[in-house]
Image (cartoon, rainbow, N blue to C red):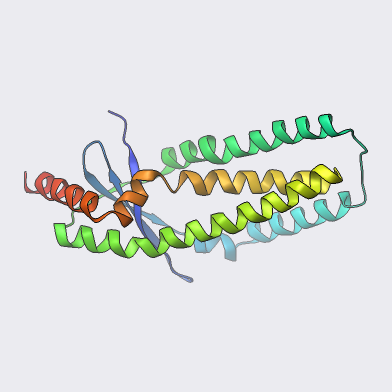
Length: 196
């Protein structure tokens, strides 16, 4: 049976390893995944990507292609849709394959406590998603008025980010973090599984 992993709590630190707690909604198993993303931002690889992206955007900033409305919309749909799909499906599947899941056992009260504390992370993701969507819509309106390559690239990258964030905020996660009756039901099932 395929795992249906829902993240419900994340502990992230600035200078050390953090972790994310997942629940498998099919088996009610709890898993902890350790991550060392902080190392990426301190590595030369981060600066290579950052500066490379900056120089590419700066280099094509003066490059304009004059298109009619329909071709510019079609290009945006294909490229933006591809980036959204990549962020939503492909990147998620790749991350799931590379995850090192560690079984974790939580009592009912610990599970409820982690899920309630996870509300802050879910709220932050929702706020970030709303801000990105507002920026996306503004840039989209600007792109439709004056099609430009740099806007197309930025809109496509925002599509990728939106896809990744939406994938990390499934409805069951929001129910787990915000709906107390659902949280209580799941916590009871987790406790019963642990008691077996």
